Image (cartoon, rainbow over all chains, first blue to last red; front, side, top):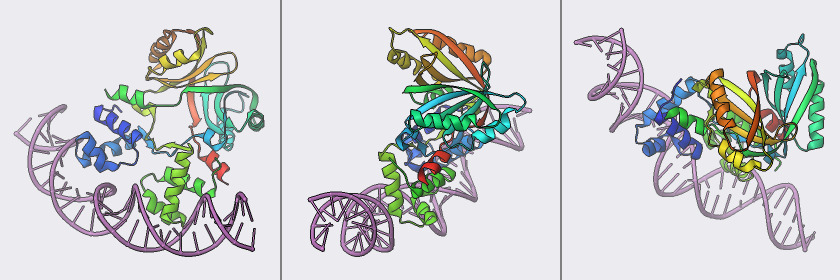
Length: 155
Length: 155
DNA sequence: CGGAGACTGAGCACATTGTCCACCAAAACA
DNA sequence: TGTTTTGGTGGACAATGTGCTCAGTCTCCG
């Protein structure tokens, strides 16, 4: 789906002020209320908007350590049962299958470096996981953001 | 900050049904409306809730390719000016400084593999970036999620 | 030209919000 | 033990909003 300038403005406005409601959006953007609703509904229907948070910061919950863990798995095992098991570990926030030297890449959080060892041990215990390699995120100078992309896509 | 069971329920409910408002939350969870508001405000004040989306799926916008790009930067340059430049590239969604063989790890999206080359070229052009290594995410069996972590933290 | 899609402004019935208040109970502190 | 702090409760007030529908208008496309 392609989005236009109004879509982009709408997303940016809601990100900046989540509580303002559709009527105030329509006032701010000089369009009809129904238009705001139709645009939001369409973006949701097309999968552009997948939800409305709440956006959670794991660090504020005490999970101060973030790591990216590359997994080597047994090829016979395949990645689906491995992923299903990884999904059961709350500290595993996302899992991708990847090209390159490893088979899967996980984003993982933990309360401390020692706790990270515990989480990695949980991962290693998953059937099919042969080996892991971890890098710890020391700082996040650019936190995850999609607004610049939305702006660029929306003109 | 530690969260309790009610906090966790509240986050889960709002994630499932973002449009229901605080009054309906209070009905669903059998607490006073003021309690819902106080809990949300406290989690926001403590940085646990950082926002309310909208959550955007880059793939639905046409950015079908996701890659994780490890950067090697010149040590003299330091990472701050590099990160500032990376932040100007809309397709760069997040940037971490990391332990291990590389200095920074970026999550990047692009419209195609060819487009990814264009984006990587933008990154390589950033002053201080010496070399990049990329892995492409082929599939995302576990998309980013924090709810299991919230549930585990909230009891 | 006709049809489809998008936008507009309005209306309807119903509901909600932000804020404040007084009260109560439990926990923390001296 | 007595006092203070914190969190929750239910209620009120003034203002505003929501989800949905509708008829009309405009633009684009076959």
